[in-house]
Length: 362
Image (cartoon, rainbow, N blue to C red; front, side, top):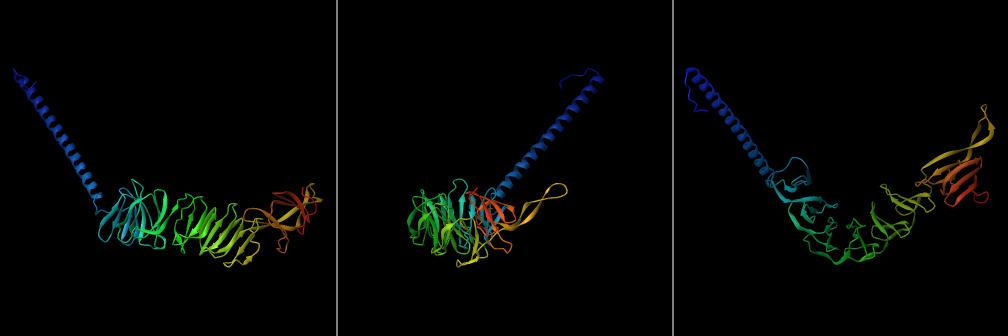
């Protein structure tokens, strides 16, 4: 096309205009392509620079950070790492989660991301002290920590060396392999739970279905029948397993529910301070033989009231607040001023206003 030979003046003008336009279009396209190319290269350079900066061992993200101590930060985003704020560098990477000791121990438990292995690092330096090679691990408590290797439990010291020269079976029902006042929850080969001391000796024999460490220095125990009791912090018996429920309150008082559904409150020495810790009381109404002007039977208030236990069972109470019956019943209805129809697990019965049965169970 550019080799076209113009034979007259008009043809030469047309040819020059066309050639000039084509040249300008080509230059414009080349300039546009150059701009796009340089923009792409700039973006790639910026991305690589940002990636290098983020992956730098001295870089600290400004989000997803948790202070393990005043000197060490755990960054839980991607990538995850420990960062020493004094030295301005990352001290460990591939950190899935961390769990600090509840008694202020210097070593903190952590898990890796890829292999989910457990280890320990110093929370004041961020340096790994015990490498992550355990299948499971718990926080340090009273100077030692429980770890699992090859399916069995052992206790280690701050150097990762054995602290107790014994191995114990792992139970998935226990999540608190920590020492409290010198005792640690442990199970035997049959899954029964007891308490061991710092030498690995049984202080409370493994004879319970479940044991919990609760506040105010008590261990809650549960037998095979589901009855609950308490042992003191040192493992000594306090309340036998003869209660439907035992709760140690933050105030130090102990709420117990008897097998007959009655709630009581004890002090820290086991003395009864409230023999009937009911939840609510309610007046009872019954239908009289009188009718109003519209032909509707009138109701009246019975002599007794009901009170409710914590597990929604009901008992009779007189108007002076005296308990007449334990809360044995699912429902109580007044039949007359001094007669009450009570429904419970053993059937129905009629009671008088003294709480006594008036006849056979219905």
